[in-house]
Image (cartoon, rainbow, N blue to C red; front, side, top):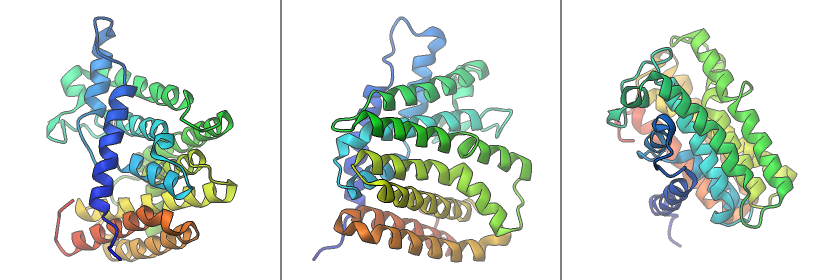
Length: 285
C-alpha cells in the first residue's frame, strides 16, 4: 500500500481551481471602469497556495462529491480571501507594498481603486457561488452562501481583523491569540469545510463536522504561520503543542469519512509538519 501523495493531489486540483477562477472573474475589455476588472484579475491570479479552495474540495470529496461540485464555492472563497488581502495591504491597515514579489494592488492601481477592487471581489464571490454547481440543489447553495456570509463577516474574518487591530501584535495569552486566529483565519477554512460538505452531499452532522475540521485546521495553520514569521514568540511552545492537539482533533473528525478523507488527513499532517519544521529553524513553506 502506497502512502497518499499530497503534493500530486494539490498540484492537480490547483490547476483546476486556477482555471475555474480565470473563468469566474470578469473578462478585461473596453468596458472596464477604472481598471476594476484588471485589478480583480491582478489580485486573484498572481499565485498562492489556494489552500482554502483545497480544503473546500477535500471536504466535498470526503462527503462523497466530485470536484466540479466544489469549484464554485472554492472560487468564491478564494475571491473573498483575495479581497481581504487587498484591503489588509492598504496604508490604513498593514501598509504592505509587495505581495508575492509584486506591487500590492493599491500600489499598482491606486488607493481608491484598491478599495473598489476588494468590494468587487467580495460581491463577485457571492454571484459565483449563487449561480450554483453541477448536481447541487438550490437549497444547498443557499445554505452554502449563508455559511460563507457568516464566516466572512463580523462573526468571522472581518470580526477577527477588527479584534487583531484592537489587541495589537503582542498577545501573551494563548486563548486570546486563538480567538483572533479562529476568527481571522480559521473562519474561512471553516466555511470551506461547510461549503464542501454541503456541495458534496453530506448530511447535517457531516457538514457540521467538516466545518469544525476546517476551523481547527485554520487555527493550526495560523499557529504554523506565526512560527514561520517569527511572531508571537512568547507563546511559541504552547502554540506548537496546540498544533499537535488540533491536528489530532482534525483526524478524529475525519475518521468517520474513511478512505474518502485521506486528503484531509494528509493536509492536517502537512500543517503539523510545517509547524514543527519552522520551530526547528527550517523555513521552507
